Amino acid sequence: MSKKSVLIALFLQLTLTFIPMGYSPSAEARGPAARSTITTITIWYEGESPTVLEEIEAGFEMMNPDIDVTLEQKSDLIHLFIDAASRGGGPDLVLGPQDYIIRFAELGLIQAVDGDFNPDDFVEQTVDGSFWNGHYWGVPNIYGNHLMLYYNKNLLATAPLDTTEMINVAKSLTGGGQYGLVFHIDEPFWLIPWLTGFGGWVFDESIDPPFPTLNTPEMVEALQFIYDLRYVHGIVPDGADDMDYGYSLFWDGKAAMMINGDWTLDAYRDHFGEANLGVARIPLVVETDQWPVPLVTGWYYSLNTNTGGDKLAASKLFIQYATSKPAQLLWPEETGYGVKLPALLEAFNDPAVQADPILKASADQANIGRVMPTSPSMGCIWDAMVDPLQLLWDDLVTPQAAADAMQAEAELCYGKITGKWVYLPAVWKP
Image 1 (spheres, one colour):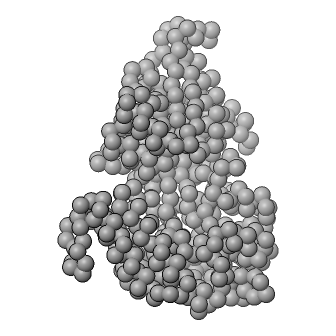
Image 2 (tube, rainbow, N blue to C red; image 1 turned 90 degrees about the horizontal axis):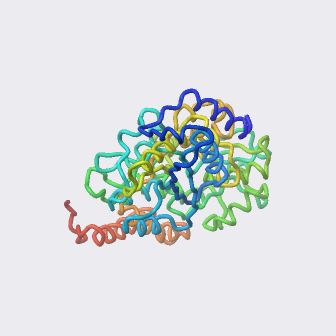
């Protein structure tokens, strides 16, 4: 179905079934010619497709002629919103990723939305991503930003199901300037799926704030696995620590498989054509019989704490409209901004997503993803992993030494931001 057809269906469905959330336009505003009483709401957003939002805006205004919506795309949303809202201003609604939303909640700049949506209607990860301090702070809109396996069907007919098959197939496709697998091997974001696949995680979340766990046996196994891909199996190129190099190899048909994010799906699909591009989950880790779990990020509509009265009612009405099934199904159709999956379960399970082989594969991977941690300690994790990963890739440290170095750096950072200092080699206690 085309976007125009979906939008028309949206108008029809909402005309028949839409129930305003506490918003009662004035009698004169209800008439088709009466626009003397107008409520204007402003929405700030960052990084999303203006086309889809503009279509949703147009449909909403058609159904609600007494409300005008102003969309404003901001390149530095988090800082601009904090500055404006803390001064008593800012937009009525903000659409942003979960780390922004939780930060706004911590600062008291947005309103809890506990009664404004039914969590059971949305994908679990997206619901979890907006929960903090006993409340929900954003209504889920879309999610994604996850890693998955791409493969060139001209070189490989089907995706490997587990790591043993992946390594064996990659060996058979490596040689003469061609490689079996490429991914950003020294970037921490690409390490997370292997760490989770070996049963590990970056935090002990029984401690508040979560305490780093980067020198565990599971981390050592994950690092050994990555090391072996180059130095034992020889299936990844020496330059795999250069993302552009790996991207070029896959693009030029010189790499059979690549682990990359959903943000590249549009480009790969256009380049290879749907018949020649394969998408699948990152293969099951044989040693643990566990799937690698990538990080996923949700995007949410949140209400400015300064918004009240008719503006608040109109903003809630817009959220309900924007998170209805027809509006949600506009997102997977959009191209050029990375394919985003609808957060509404009814839309996520719709044939528009599930009957499309590429979208379904992306959805299958995202569906086992883990929500990006919003703890300030996560910054410590990212920074701590970078240098040891590079040293491991250059064969200058062992996996155990790399894990120990990560942990030491993360603990120092953790102490700085929490005040809970770690005096190595003493045992830390919360």
